[in-house]
Length: 606
Image (cartoon, rainbow, N blue to C red; front, side):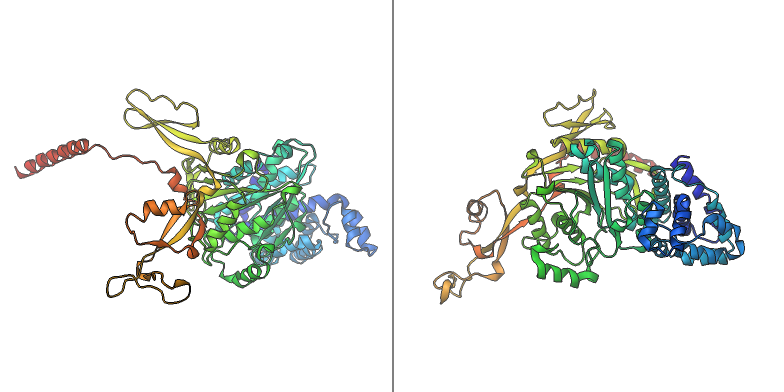
C-alpha cells in the first residue's frame, strides 16, 4: 500500500466525523488514532514478551528491551480487544493509552486525546472510529517507516491546509523547505556520498516537524545509508504532539523533541549541531520572555546566546537567529550550516549602534552569512509579505570567504490553482533547481526576459556572468535584470558620523568654549547638528571634504560620536532603472487621445 492510498483510507474516517466535528477539528481525532494504530501494530509481535516482564515486576528498561523498540505498552489491550468489548470501549481505550511508556503517553496528552475520546463517546462515534482504525494493517512489514512517514505528512498537510487561519504558525510550505534543504546540503559532498555517515539536524521552531522530515527525505534519496538524528523544540502543544508522533512513526528518538519556548527555556542547552533549519514567527513581539532574554544578555554576554545585541521588542526574529548561532558545531569539529526564513525587517531595521545593526555586524564581521535569497511574495499561508532565506555557515569554502551572495528569487513562482489563505504562489521544481544552482556555483547572474514585438513575454533565461544573453526576436527585445550578486562583507558596513556646525553668538561669530577640552574651540549648535553615513570602504575625511565641506565650510566631525553600522539594502542592489518614454512619444499619444475625445464630444453635441 503506497502512502497516498494509505492516507486516503485514513482520511475516509472524516466521513464519520462530518457533522459532529468541524473540518478544522478532524486532525484532533484522525492524527492521534493513526499514531495509536501504528504503535498497536508495531508492538504486536513483542506484546507477550513485554507482558511477561510486567508480570515479573521488571522495571521499564527491561520492558524497552523486551519490546524491541524505544517504547512499550504494559497492558494486554490492543485495538482488536477494544472493538470486541463495545460496552467498555471508552474506559479500556483510556487504560490502553495510560499503559504506554511516558514519552508516548506525552504525545496523547498533548493531543488532549482523553477529551476527544469523551467527545466521540458522547456523539456515539467512538466505537465506529476505533473499528475503522482497527481494520487497517499498519504493521512495519506491510507499511515501512518511510511509507508511514509520508502518509502521516500527507495527513498533516491536509489538516494544515484546511485550517488556513493558523496554518502559517505551524506549517511551512513544502517547496520552501525543499529549497532550504537543497541549499543546506548542496556543498556537502561527504554527507551525500560517504557510507553510513551520521549527522544531526535541529529546528528550534519545529512546528509539525516538516523541515526535519524533508531534510531526512533528501538525505535518504542521495545517500540511503546516511543517518540524520533529529532534534527540535516547539511551543504549541498540538504541533509538538504531531511532530513527536511523526518522529516516533519514523523510528527516531523522540526524547530529542521537546516542548517549550526556545527563547526563554532552551530545551537542548549546550548541544551543538551539524545542520539547522528554522521558520520562526514573523514580526512577533517577545515581551513575554523579555525578562529572561535580557537577563541572559546582561549576565552571560557572548558566553550566552544573545551576546551580539537585542532587537526591539516588537520583532523577535533575530533572537531566533542568534539562538541558532549559539548552536553551531565549531568549525574545528566539522562546522555547521543553517537556513532560516525571515521577513525583510532583519535586513535593515535599526541604525548604527542599535541592537539589530550590532547583530548584523557580528554576523558579517565574523564572516558567517553565505547567502540571502529573496522569495516570492504570497508564499505563506498567513501572510503575503516579502520573505528571505538566510544561509549561514562557519565552514565557508575558500571562494566564499569574506563574501556574501544575494539572490533575487522573487520572480521564481507559478500561480496556484487554488489559493490557501494568503498563499497564492508556489515555486516549481525548476525554480528551486535554478536557485540551488546559482547558490552552489557561487556565480553572478542576470535574468533575461525575452519580449516579442507586442511586448509580450515569450521566454525567460538565467544568464551566468560571462555568457551571452539570448537573441531578441524580430521587433522584440531582451530585458536584463540582476539575479545573483556577490559582495564583500564590508560593502554592507558604514560609519555614522556626526557633523557639527558652530553656535553663533549675538555678534554673529562662533561661541568658544571657556574651560576643559572645549576651551578655545567653537561650540556646536545642536539645532544644526546632522549625521552622514559613510561606507566602511571609504575614507571619512575624503568623504567629508567632498560631500560636506563645499556646502558647510565651517562644519567639523565629532569623532567621539562616530558609530559603525551594518545594513543589507537588498532591493537597492536589484533595482533596474527604466527610463521614461521619450517626451515626443508621450505627446503624440496624448494628441491621439485628445482628438478621439473631441470627436466623441462632437458626436454627443449633434
